[in-house]
Length: 341
Image (cartoon, rainbow, N blue to C red; front, side, top):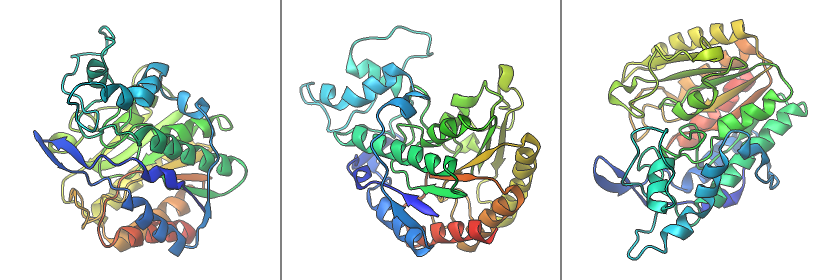
């Protein structure tokens, strides 16, 4: 299996983000890439650098206005007298059906769902390389690779078509899925991150050609709070093509595997041509976010079950998973589990 990544993904680093009314150290650090790369190499993956790909794969899932905002927001923000070092919203519209002001302050509120995705001078370049990483890994699968691992940083599954949020700017999972869709009638996305992939859900919510399935901590008292409930099943042509499986906080391997059985059966019924795994390792029992309690060995069992039961060409896209001693080993176990399966 190849691990695709680019070192420019480390340029993005807002050192703080706003949470619960206070600025706190940002856990989404560049070092994550190093730790995850160590784990992928230890699992036997071969490193590969993606090529620059321009706006086409990104523009397939994101709006032109949003991409223009992301590219130029920091430079515009810095023209404000006394501006903070990172673009952070402080005002939001009450709906999407509103005017579109020229002010970067207002556009930040329009295009950023919360304050946990600050934009710095390195954000746009890193986000593009993260997206191109997913796109190139998808192209490897299309070219006949059974699996490819996209080491994406910053992550992407909280990014909507026109909004950043939750450390995410460009939706790498959706970008990869859309590219695979060009050669397959149906694509399934299985999100196993601690947090619900609300951006991915939104992008495909009205479509019946991409099935989105997410296993995550119950959002009633956990980010992203407003999305991820079992009653969200899609709309229009997409009704029935979104499945959320929220788990009680503190759930461990057994509860996760029970939900995974439901997810796998739904994906098998859908009969996709390829699978995208949105891989969050933050469900780990020792992750700083502490929402679920998956063990290191549990990640191997989860991956083996996915591979054995679905047997599909698979793109693995890195989402969450934050700095702890076991981060690289958790990834190694997951990738070995895919080989086991």
